[in-house]
Image (tube, one colour):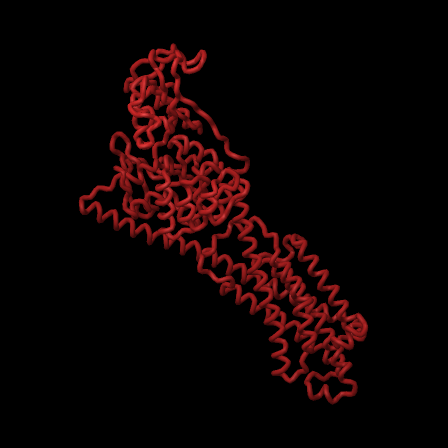
Length: 591
């Protein structure tokens, strides 16, 4: 990667580059103008144009002073470009000769450069990026910046947008030359040790991005990569989730990606993560609710058959329950708006099933609770309407048993619908009580109203209720409607009490994910430590220019930068990195 670009201009017959501009040496017919990374250009410059417009030799001390100025600008998050020229009477090649390749022309034009000056510019971060990075960190998403910028510029930008903290040491950012000392990439364990602690990579080449993505994936992380250029395409394709820019992105980058960001805004990625977690949580709630009510309905019929009690509902009533009264609330659960706490939970493992063990337990227990309260209501109604009889043989011997049994079934039917509606509100959260943000899901209110309307139609509409469904909403009287409320009240109390157990299970599950992440990190660290110890024992030094890879016992893998006295800076890593489940590789263009 040249880190610069060059254009050749025909200035035949000119004394100045432009009117009132730079004076040209006599006999100049062509000028090669070069701009790019200051450190790459300045090292090839032999002369410099001073303030008076005269050309003089560029001494090593002046180069050092210029580099210090560049560092000062870069520390202010300014992007600095150096501009140099090479005036010539003629090129040592024919510009029209197509047999001379571009690289040969480039090397000839960039010789004996004269430094003209520096240009500093700033690309301010977009509104909300700082907050989005902090939100991502809280969601166990590690944001890593990979950029072609100068190291000090990259560090300043990273600090401005909270990718790097004020307390982070030098080891949290590095020049990508550290990955390839001498032009060859380090061994995989060495690169992994470097990427474990680095959150800002500067002067990156396309190949460097591939190596960084590959390193994160080796460590078991789910890696998302953003990019917009043709050179980003390999890394976008390699990442678990390639995210291309929809506005500035090239067609090649879009084709290599799995997702396109239509507004080129990093904030949208964080919003998408939040929305994805909300949708997935909604699916879990939907399945858990459906399973609990269906388990309850099956258990109720099972208990009736085993206990020789008249079955509490007919096949048509069961079908009506499933299609009309159960379905709307369950769909509304899948459309839960969610809350900000969803981003505080740890990302789920890729192999995790939709329904976890504690979710199954919750569905079974809540189904059992629903069964218990409805059976109690049904037995009370059988005693009341069937002259104190509850067993099937005794009830069938009664005069007018069809009407009496229909009354009892109607009360149980109404109580079950009301209980399932209450259960839908309870199912909006596994660990929060139903009265928290009770009216937060507008779709749930619509679904419950639809279910209540369907209940009234099923129990009160003449012919449809009594002739088709066999329900007697009027015949049960006020007593029947009052008793039906026992079911939802009992469901509310018992299910909310069981949430105490579920809250504990959710907390234990999150702690388990944390322990597994920490254990995996420690195992990977131990493998790296053994590799580096073996390299040291064999006398094969592991160095990347002035960066030395070390392992700190009892801490994360560290990289310390050697100072001029041979000492090493203290590692600034904390146990925070241990909790990371999803490193997020980003680009400064998103700022």
